[in-house]
Length: 223
Image (tube, rainbow, N blue to C red; front, top):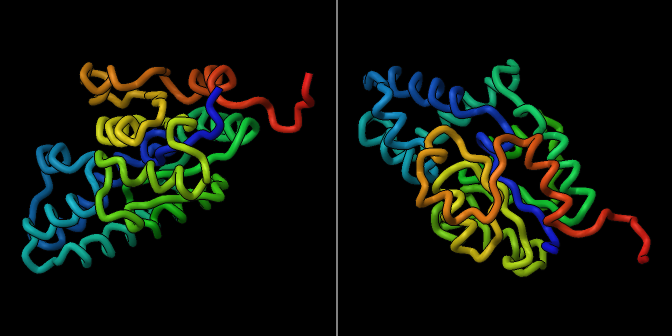
């Protein structure tokens, strides 16, 4: 049995992708670049360093840093207006995992947004790794390796719950067992799905699988 569960945030626990697309597109439009589906396809699931550089390249009066600030401001405002929230079953999935061992949150997104989203959605993670914490983000293994280090548990003893190709690759490269809840893009990427030992259609199905994969119920006596 594995000892800990490490979760991705965007589109694994919260339905944020459409809002990210809207917010980044609005920032781009304000700075003279008409946002297109092709732009979104080029950055979806990538690291903050990648998408902020992409946006700054297309909006010369933005720097990567100012692009991040503007977009995070927009996402935090969207949270405040309730424009997105938890995916169905996500709260129960996290609660099930927390009842069976330590949990952590690993996101490629900026820290201010990650912590705001977790707080707004009532998600409590003693250990959080964000895009601000590592020089190399997903798909490099660094974010998941850092989470394992902070948990004090070997990555080989951790279950990673992910939706995206970059996240699955990152967790697999770190040596974690991957439970994939594939998004619409990942569902068609069979090479990536081969890296996931377990798959679930959604968070509710994942919650049903998790007790067979991680720990024993906390507080259960020895038998």
